[in-house]
Length: 373
Image 1 (spheres, rainbow, N blue to C red):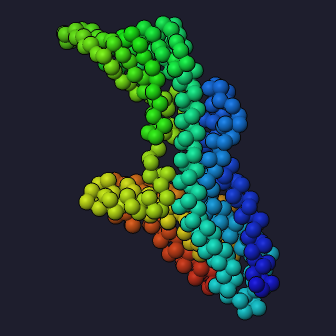
Image 2 (cartoon, rainbow, N blue to C red):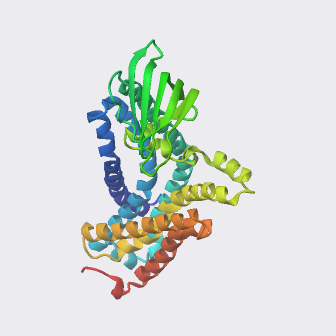
Image 3 (spheres, rainbow, N blue to C red):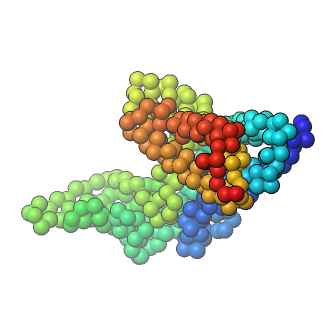
């Protein structure tokens, strides 16, 4: 590796580390309040919440790395342009392509790493997060059910029982008031118990030997009573511990092979297949983003004539546009309003085209695109 390549990569490395830390912190803050609520209001241990945070980090890093690469490339070349080092290299006969080659190579390496990361570490972390969160919910659901106390933790109904017996916690004289109808339906049962489905990650309340009473409504609907020997009601458990990871799609926990197999299985069902195709191509497109951002980040920085403030503003603007297009394109692709490849790959295509234009402008040193002095 030549001295110039090492120098440029060294200039790139420090803002890259700082950018990763900055964007990871910003994205973590989006989840931090929900996680703090688990500690402060739900009685979950700080160690467990820290484990949840560790499971969240891979999904955050997958998004933060392309952002950090763009910021670091703009700041690195912006600093060199500010100190006239870019001019000196051009005087020495080096073109923009030669100067940006080390960063393009670094972007390609990071894209390859992220490509493997998104297919292995990311789905495993999503599954671990879901399992850990479910164990918290299971524990909280058991603790929350207290005898002779109205349990209001579930949005869809009110629960009351007279006693809880045995190691399995069998509930005696159970009453449920459902909120979904007016007037609400009232369910009573002699016994009830919690059943946990670890595979489906669900908790349900099984009632035995009871009745379901629907009172007469104000419009004249007749009173009805239905007896049952067994009645199951799934607990809306994700509502009383915020965050809702159990509602996330199972495809987020699939590796590339699982997604590919699922795509082959759904070839005859295009409506269902589309969601898996979007997920599959989105991971690939996001993994290649560090490579594409180098084509626009380095020449943008080279056009700068001021310090890091301008570079940060430009970087944030490009990042906003990129992720706005990514969200918009994925939404259109999910709804079938746009071909999957078009909706998913549009942001990278725009980066490549814009990078080519800025690269050409930087090589020609067009004055209309410069900022600062």
